[in-house]
Length: 260
Image (cartoon, rainbow, N blue to C red; front, side, top):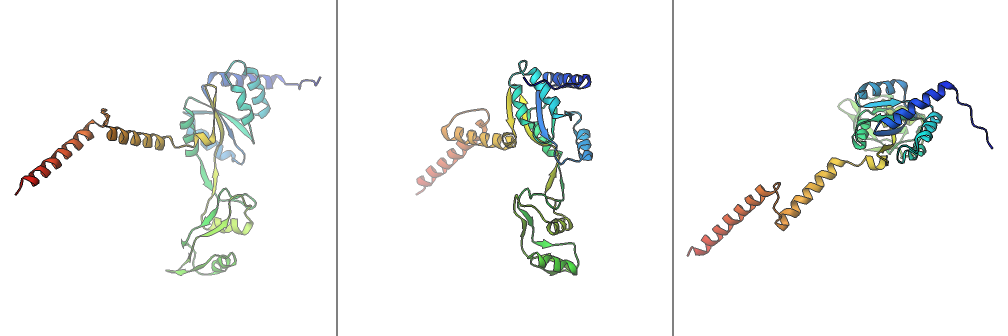
């Protein structure tokens, strides 16, 4: 039998604190903080302190706490598999979708560094640049970027794909993108999943624009009600307006037919 790893009293106390948080809070999020600078984390803490409690601790202690309460909180053990990268836990009373939007709102952009993978196609857009004619024209030409001079400034003639999504960015490309002010990297908390009442919401679900979906559903419901003549308080005025317009059109048509 494999001997159990020793856990110090300090670690036991920390684990108990995590257990209490897991039990007390209705919504628990798991985020990956890989690549997040400490200054950015502190800024996020300050901006969200009224809505979120962010806990940064060792992954092992998180797992121990989850294991300790898995019989007490429905389906909580499922979040263990979401502890990827450098994980942290967020405790909140916001619903998962509002939480996701708050996390996205607190992201910021940054330049890409040499060796980093392009998060998407990195496009240098056509148009004027802040640079005066000089060595920069040669730098652009060496990369296959068509440019010219317009109004005393270098202008890029057409959109140029500096790197494809998933490709590592070399030093020359990274330097040019920084000079042009292209900041494709998002810095912030990378949401992995959110737990609420036994349900695990993954990022692909939380990223759905709920407001757009509701707006579309309401619009389609109005159109159906009007088409089928279903009277509701939301469309009664429009139905009366349509009926009046139809009556006036019918009256005009009858009068036209009566005219010799």
